Structures are given as C-alpha cells and as structure tokens.
Image (cartoon, rainbow, N blue to C red; front, side):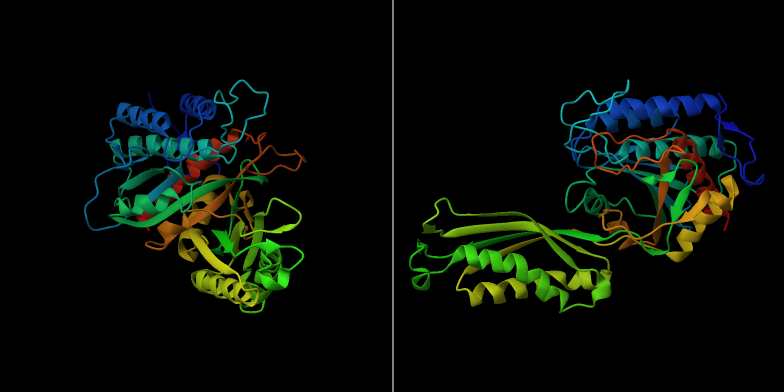
Amino acid sequence: MNQLTSREPGSATLPGTLSAPLRAELIAFRRDVHMHPELGNQEFRTTAALKARLEAAGLAPKVLPAGTGLICDIGTWDGRRPMLALRADLDALPIPDVKTVPYRSTVPNRAHACGHDVHTTTVLGAGLVLAELDREGLLPNAVRLLFQPAEEVLPGGAAEAVAAGVLDGVGRIIALHCDPRVDAGKIGLRAGPITSACDRLEITLDGPGGHTARPHLTTDLVTAAARIATDVPAVLARRVDARSGLSVTWGRIESGHAPNVIPQHAELSGTVRCLDLRTWREAPDLVHAAVDEIATLHRAKSTVNYVRGVPPVVNDPVVTELLRDAMTARLGPLAIEDTEQSLGGEDFSWYLEHVPGAMARLGVRTPGDTRVRDLHAGDFDVDERCIETAVELFTAAALIDATA
C-alpha cells in the first residue's frame, strides 16, 4: 500500500506526506503505547512493538544492549556523508492517568504525561515514509531512527545510548518535544539554549547531638541545616553571573524526632538548575564550596552527593534552520513561532555534546483551547493532528538535509 500522497501545503518539491491509512495506523499505534506506559529502562513492550512494525516494513532495527530502545537505519549509508538521526524517547512517568478517554493508561500509577508516546509514534511514522521513499529511489542519504529509553531517569538514557554507539556515522540529530502551549499544526523554534541543565543535590549533615538547653556545647544541627537551605542559594547567586540562571531549590529537609533533643543527623535534597552551559560545568565545585563553608561555620560535618543530570539543550543555529526550512516546505512560515528557553531538563543535550543538532517544540494544543495545560500532569493529552505535522516535518528535514 502506498503510504504517500501528493498534497502541497508549503512546497511541491518534497515528497513524503501521509496517506489516510498510515495516518490512522499511527494514531492507533500512539494510543496503544499510551495505554501501556513503561518506566525508564523497562520499555520492553514498546521496544518489541517498534521492532515488529519496522521489520514488517522490510527494515532491520537493532535493539540497544540494555534490551530496551533501538536504532534503525533507512537507506544504505555510504560510509562517507554523515547521516541525519531522528530521535524519540520511549519512557513514561510514575503518575496516575486521570483522563477519561478510551486510550487511558491501563497500568496503575503510570502515564505518558510528557508526550513520549507521541515522540515515538512520529519517528516511527517518519521511518515508514522514508523507507518507501528509499525504495522509490528518492532518499539521497541514509537516515537513522533512534528510539531511546529512560529519558526521565537521571542522568538520562541518552548517555548510555551514546556509549552504545548510536551516533556512529551520524552528523546531525533532531528531535521534537510536545508543548501544550503551542497549537497543533505549529512548531516552536529557538537557536541556542532551549532547555535548562538539571542536576540532583543530596546533602547530609552530622554532629554529636545534645540537649536543646545547651546548644553551645554541641552542633546545633537543625540551625545548620536551615542556614544551608537559605544561604547556599544566596551565596551561589553572588558567585556566578546572574544571567546564567543558576538556581538551587529544595524539595526535602529532614532532621530530628523530639522537641528537646538536638539531632545527630540531617538531610536536604533538591535540584540545581542552570540556563548556561559553562556555569553548569562549574556548578558542582561551586555548590560543594558553598556547602562546606556554611557547614564549617556551624561545626557540622557535611557530605554532598551531587548527581549529574543533564546539561542544557543548546540548539545549533544551522540545524535549527534545517527545521525551519522543513516546516516552511510542509506548512509554510506561519506554522513556525519563536519559543523561549525552558527551565525543564532534557537528556537530548547529551547527543549535542558529540554532534550538532536541534530540538523543536511540537504544538499539541487544539486550536482555540484556552485552558492552561502543562507537562507531567495526569490529565495531559494531545490533539492527535500533531502526529501528521511531526512526521512530515521529520520527513522534509531528512530530504532537505540529504540534498543540502
């Protein structure tokens, strides 16, 4: 069955728009994945479904060494001209799905509340379209599909995927991320940083303990914890350029069990976010120094566990223009809007440590819908017309990149 049509939304020069049967199949695939969400590094069912569909299309997908996620090359790589990679992430979140829809999650306390089911479906759809173009001799250069596990698990599955060699032969990489603030049929673009770095910070404080009547004879550990909670963010704000956006925010503080006992142990944990790549690289040393100074002042023994998460996604200007050209070719320039840098983290950034690339915001909001929606919410859903937009964008980008 021919999976392509000859619609002309923005350009008559690029083949590869969706047929009605493939459009319906992709919506059904997305809903099936949505009903069966899997957490990071547990995406066995999703991986098997992708592998089966790609093999049915005559392709040869390869499952990644960890057993979840896969890569699949479309066309024959000549070993010289680098490939364009299309990346999707597979994992869901450990939250309940509270929507009332036929494709609601069937797994308790698991939901595709970040749109990874859409990302997966659109890269699959682009692969099926590009495979047919390749059979027709219309794909000038090979393209790699990359379905990555564990994006939501720090430091992200991308780092392990890179170590497994998924970028071998790749010269550029592109991705999309669902954005409920952008209408379906549109994308948001930004050259330069588009997400924030995000790390995890865990601090333990220890002291000899004692009676609250005599804090001068011991280490007042609760006060030490309180001063670290308030002073570390303040100290850091004066040690980096304010434009870097370095921010420490606490999510947990625990210490003590009795009102008249100074405890021997305290714990703090939170996140470190940063808009600037250079400052992010310096952040662990800066945080360690600030914690040590304040803990020493209060005679507390401190231990810092700084867990690297992800650097900012910094979109390459040339690859960002590739996405702009592809969207213009498919839907015209009015389907593109500028987007701002987010404070959220994305492990797509690990790929950009090795090859240039760009991530776009994929509009998933039904036009005219004025409700305020966000990612990582149990009622998150998309206008499924976004699937066709994303598939055609990926397809056009692959064709433009191959002929540039």
